[in-house]
Image 1 (cartoon, rainbow, N blue to C red):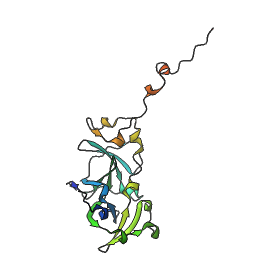
Image 2: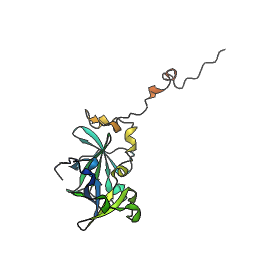
Image 3: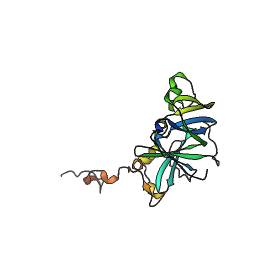
Image 4: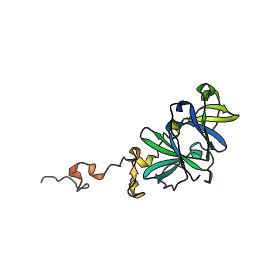
Length: 202
């Protein structure tokens, strides 16, 4: 996928869903938090991150963490191809991308057309599924995107290496801006000689 697709959220976005494929299953997410869809980008991995957390991308100067939806749903990993793309989502001040096998379309799904999750069994990853819908003879699993991306790449917020080292001059979004505690945050009297023993009067 070479082109970027930007989604404009209209007043009736409440019942609009972006559908995409993952392991030959069709999923749908509300477009409320979807910003755009981009083709695969160069991903810089983050050391010691879980397998599904692929790393970060530099999207027009912004550092965005990305997760692999297949691995997040505990499905078999697949090599990326020309249909693979990244769906960029923003919730509050947090922006995240999730990699999918391919996008389908934006559809309208009324709430009454969705069967609640507790009435069905969807298999692995069903903790992220809120319901199921039948649209034009296609089964769509409705996904809670907030749950899918709720667990951020843990090493970013307290990462020992500055993210700007990956992309000099890049703008780091709020969720990525937290820095690890610096040694100088220790009490002043212990900074210079941390191993010095207190003197004992003669």
